[in-house]
Length: 401
Image (cartoon, rainbow, N blue to C red; front, side, top):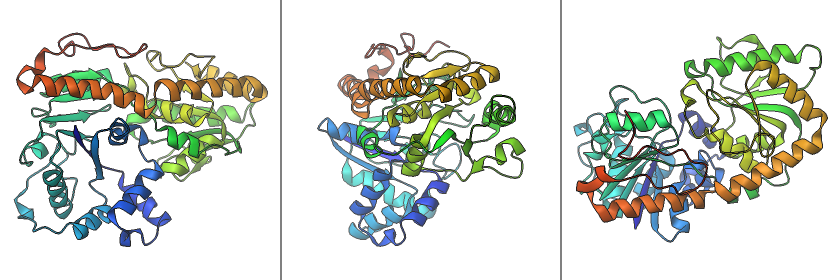
């Protein structure tokens, strides 16, 4: 199977990565790929890496990274088409500059994939798929967040997600087949972080936006509680703070961290907080659940509206439902390091056993083999297969609507 994955990385991350790797644009395409993926930004989504471990021929590109993409063009000269002839590539217009879009299309043409995997099917939806000739046998997309009204998934064969509302949206937006799938974490990155000592008491890393109002409220309240009786512990928030950030968050804030810097930050905390976005109802856990446990950090996460059931509270992670419970558990586990360390180690063992990148790639491989064998005409007849205990299935025939 030939598997081609398209990733789009945050512009803020790419700017930060360039700062940490001056002159990297002069390196070869292969060297820049090694640097990018070695840093591990969004590593839970490196499905191409997992598929390669299973023996498949793969290629993964960061379509909006000018450094690596222009290096590929330099090593693989071609005559670009009319860059002005392309319309929007997705619901948010055109998120890849025309010159880089031409490179991406040429990469796909030369690789001739059986499977095209879209990591961001909002920026690159069916409008982008229509630009590809010849069309891959199977187009797969991942989404576990909001789905804008203008999104077009009418030419998506398979939508995978651990977020039930996204799967429901997939059916409405025209994706032919929807399946529940957990992300996975590369074991190599967990091993690379071994030996980093705990140097902070309570850490949080994540985005603040209108989609994270509850998160902002909890972080602000915790800052207030930290100053009260029983408080006095250190808070460290790696967030995108701005002029509208509440003072309680801003006073503990530092610049956002990405890639290896984020993993080191999570690893450095005695307690690693996780607070889901409002959209995380009926989800299998956000990326931080897997990233923190893979690092061997003690994860203290909110339950949200329902328990995702991935890790055992009190044994592999800890959970809270209210601000009062959050404060009580922070104080308790700071005062009981043996229990905290025991839970953190059990959580890491569970993550790397059941939610490794290779495990998740094996589950995706089964879906792809089923899809390629059936052909596009039968895709609507698929049924959910229980690959691993603890996953919440999508009802037979796609999602219930």
